[in-house]
Amino acid sequence: MTFDYSRLVELCLDIESYLGYLKGNELVVEYVEAQNVQGELYLIDHADEQIAGDYAILSYKSTPSDGQFACEFFGLRWVLPFDPQGDMPSWGPGYLDTLKEGARTSWESGATWASGIADYLKNLCGTFTEADVEKFQSVSIDLKNAIGLGLVPADFAASSNSDFGSTLVHWQGGWRDAFVTFYEHLPPRADLYASLVSITGDWVEGVGALVAAAQAGLLDFLQSVKDALAVQLGQWIEVGRTPESYDAPPDLGWVADIAGVAGDIVEVIPIVDKFAEIPGDVVQVAETIGDLKSAGDIIGKYVNTSGDDLPRRPIEFTMKTAEEIYNGLTSTMYDEFLGEFDKALQTLKTERAQSIVDSVNNVQGDRDWYPRSVPGIRNDSWESDDDN
Image: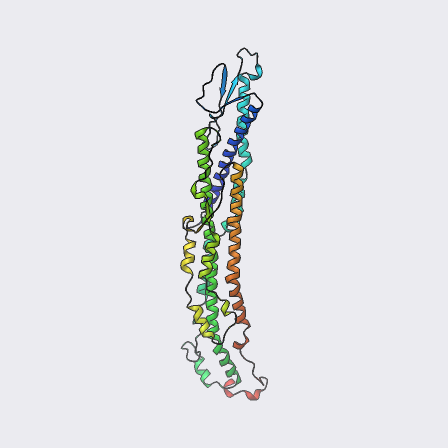
């Protein structure tokens, strides 16, 4: 499934808004409770409680800009005794407006508290959310198509594509011997290079698959957080005050197992450590690498994955106050996604990429397959007529 960056942005914006609504609700309750402590207000715990005598009852309803999750705090009503004759002006009708304004500014402070969360969340995992998986796939294809086994014919003299073949039969002298020695070592090492390039293509695609898995896992996690916030805000609307239960939806207790994904990818990328020391039978080595199973199937599974298809591992995530949710959200993104992704990249590097580099360097440093120097090369006497 192609990663939709716009969906990431949308989820982050929604989470910021929902956290702002939740924080605003909490601040309204704190404000009401603070007034009650001062003895100026009486709280009614139940909306159906009967009120007797000369009392004014004030309730406040929040005003989200998008109209979603507007909460009427009927579970925390202000019950204010007042004197119609004005003998107690501080408790008169004008004071009710003051209290309502305090509740409004308290709720709006929630949005101020949450401001900037979306941008922070969006950029927190930029290491992989800003990466383009299709570019990894394109590079992998280019590498695998760049060179193939059999590029250099094993028998140069017999090659139908070589006009030099007949010349080689009649060529005599030290140059000819040096060339034959060189060419005997060239085809298998060319095949070895081709195999290593192909494995490098698998490695590049594997990194792309890891990126895709991390992207899909993060989107699913953020969606779960958003859904859990929506459930909690709905509970506020239902009870008109702080909900008694903060149970998180079941699907918020897990995250994508990034380390598990990396382990799967490492398993299918061929190991080339054993080729660090090139043995005498290079042909067999090249054929062994060339016959290794392609990693395309398992890697392709993760490139085209959705979050539901990923291996999972459990986490503890508390859905309670806005600050606890924010702290849990950011720490999970940092530890379980960004941190695990960085460690997974290091695993792919140390357990696969480095051995590829070492093998390439070893082939380059193997002097046995280079043209040998010929004694007396500066002496024209050793040349045959065919050398001229």
